[in-house]
Amino acid sequence: MTDERDFGFHTRSVHAGARPEPTSGARALPIFQTSSYVFEDPESAAAYFNLQEYGNTYSRIMNPTIAALEERIANLDGGVGAVCFASGMAAQTSAFFTLLNPGDHVIASSALYGGTVTQLKHLFRKLSIELTFVSPDNVDEWRAAIKDHTKLLYGETIGNPGGNVLDIEALANLAHEHGMPLMVDNTFATPYLCRPMEFGADIVVYSTTKFLGGHGTSIGGAVTDSGEFDWSNGRYPVIAEPSDAYHGLAFHETFGIYGYLMKLRAETLRDLGACMSPFNAFLFAQGIETLPLRMRQHVSNAERVAKFLSEHPMIESVSYPGLETNLYKPLVDKYLPKGAGAVFCFDLPGGREAGQQFIRSLTLFSHLANVGDAKSLVIHPATTTHRQLSDDELLATGIGPGTVRVSIGIEDADDLIWDLEQGLAAIKE
Amino acid sequence: MNIADYQSPDVIQAALSERRIAIVGLSSNELRASNFVGYYMQRHNYDVIPVNPREQQILGNTCYSSLTEVPGDVDVVDVFRASDAVPAIAREALEIGAKYLWLQFGVISEEGIRIAEEGGLQLIVDRCLKVEHARYVGRMHWLGFNTQVISAERKPAV
Image (cartoon, rainbow over all chains, first blue to last red; front, side):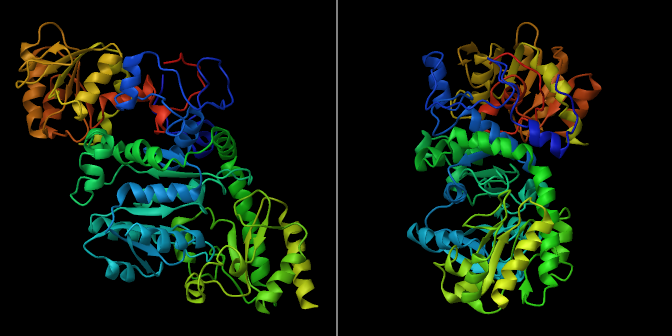
């Protein structure tokens, strides 16, 4: 019997979504490496395609291994469900695509992952969706940017790479006053450090590639939904009205709190096709089993490394929001009491040249374009991840020519500090 | 009134172990939520009794214009009606000796709940019959929904 116990975060990280496989009794999550599923009979097949029964049809749309991961992420986030995608970018594109129409307007934080800025500026313009970027720190700027056709507010819990912390509750209240949802990218915090829905966010997106998976093995993304937003408030006919793309089904009326996710899966994932691989889902689900353990070590290492750098005479600035002197410390106390994540930037003297020399001199830090690995990582954003941005856009995201971004892993903090010391010594020479 | 008091997993699972369900406000339109629920419960071998004064037959079963006209015992009364219709439905549910009154998403009536409670009906409020069946018995987990079920027990395949 399922009782009313509220299980803890660690228990749910290990168990949510993955009960023993009923046919074989397999305790580990099986990898259902199959494209498709044999129907019991023609009536069942019809019921599955009509969405009258929960049934597997085709792995572009659903797969039991991926479903276990989806439920695990949704459970940890406190959402009603989740849909996984081939990448974080695919997840966020699909999350946008499901609720927006051409001519709609979106307001987004200007301090976002470079790939997201590019996507919003260029891909969404092609789709005739209007964008306004505003400072993540000034709620009045968000309010002033709202137009009649604004349909969504969007930001990152912890901005990449500037480390700005979003005032989720204030923005959720603003969005809801105007009958809009707030969508938050919670990749850097993970549900262990912050659950945006507890502060009013409606939709949360993830790159599962990062801390959720935690080992840098696979590319993936996820979208979770609180189920709280009223899509039938007259502003979202794309979800509330009968859908031509699904024989006249009205997703919100028919599926209620599950309506957005059903449409995201049955239409957007079906049509855009950016599905996760079952094998990757297995690796992500396994990664999440140790999420709370890893995050504690990531955070404790990041705090020590950030403190070391902030006290180092050669370092001009350290953007770790967990530092006592950081501008965002009050927001960290509110939204990230367990820690401000493990990704941050610092500025080296000597600009571009020094940045590259520093990276060349490191032993433990891997120079690559990713974050959220068990291994410590380093990159020079101005010449890599944020290369497509203009100088003005770069400044708006808080990146200078000598800025180095690190993702602190779960090694020994003393070893990481030793490595950074030798990098700094190399540029001093 | 605290709605969470009427969403007990134990009461929900006990209601799901019954067999005869009258759905008040069941629609014959295959795209309406009530029809999804009726179709689904029938598929899972429940005896679904449509209650709708405007129809003769829904999902192949005879449709009754009110609960009091339904022949035989009714275990669960599932309500897809406007909230202000609930008090009268609760009285009828008591009159026919039903065990559970189940109010679907958004069907919330303080008076209806009071009448049902005072009469001794077990209540489930602001929950979907299909979703709860799929959560505890069925395959809701196949579509990535949060069933909130945490268990290492090996259950039979469904």
